[in-house]
Image (cartoon, rainbow, N blue to C red; front, side, top):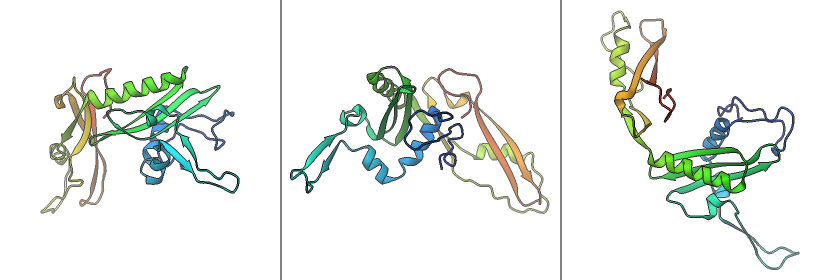
Length: 216
């Protein structure tokens, strides 16, 4: 299931996460797993809860309360924490995966191999603040790319050409960059029967930047 979600560089040999030969994952893979997990409302309810009340039992007549010790959950921030999960083993050190929302933007931060327990929270907050404050939304109209592709396609006896998808491409850009810093290219993947063509578009930064990945 993890591989279906895009975690292609992980190998899980147990379900509890304790160290074992050939048991490993990556920050990217953990982010992919969490990205799909937060689509489940029950998951968010469990991993975003500050307090849990255990009702009385036949052995304990009074209700008991358990408080979440995850600082991303039990502290107040300028964004909404959707879900967060801590981890620690002697080999992995302190780890933390967190999904948070501010306005219409949702971000996921994964911190691995943190030497200090508090360090995983400090790094997570810094990265979330960076993602929320230093990036802005841009939208690219696909019509601009369609013209590039059409110039390289030949259709016989076609009165109308319908191109999908219709929507624009939305992405995040660092505030130091503009839409002019984005380069575009395309590849004609399939063009067989004069009625259907598959075109793959690529968006990249024209010049390398240490502020964001060049492959958009």
